[in-house]
Image (cartoon, rainbow, N blue to C red; front, top):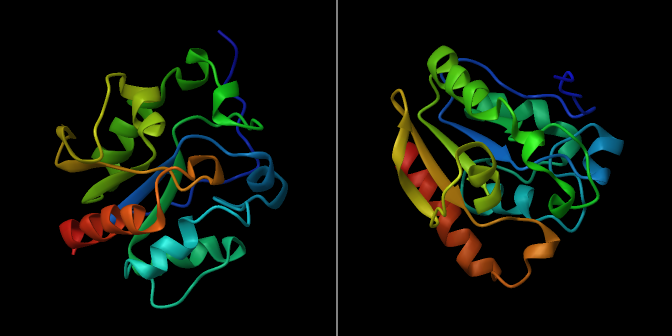
Length: 171
């Protein structure tokens, strides 16, 4: 088996966080800037602030600052692609085990999957948005709408509603 190729985008993690946001994988903008959700058209950072997770709007270059707000960042797959449709099943090999280990070792209150595919890659199934039945030890799993510009069919208000629901859950 080939080794997993890690992208230039680092995990931003620490013990005892309120929530770890898990994207599907780094896109080319994120890889180029070595920062999560770095595409300027991606709504992640705006939603994080609007939902009350951060007291101000952060730039992707400030990603390490999220730790101070009880937030972590990771991806389900590490391979950088132009779009998530370029991912293959093998890109998620070991991701469920890695997320289970993250939950056991760091004990975040929740993992918020940014998009259904970010959850489906590691765990399979057809998740709905919101709190999932599955847990990783005591860590809750919550599926959010994707914040990608490719997910324009889900309007801002709907995305914000789910981000606020997650914030209320972990507060």
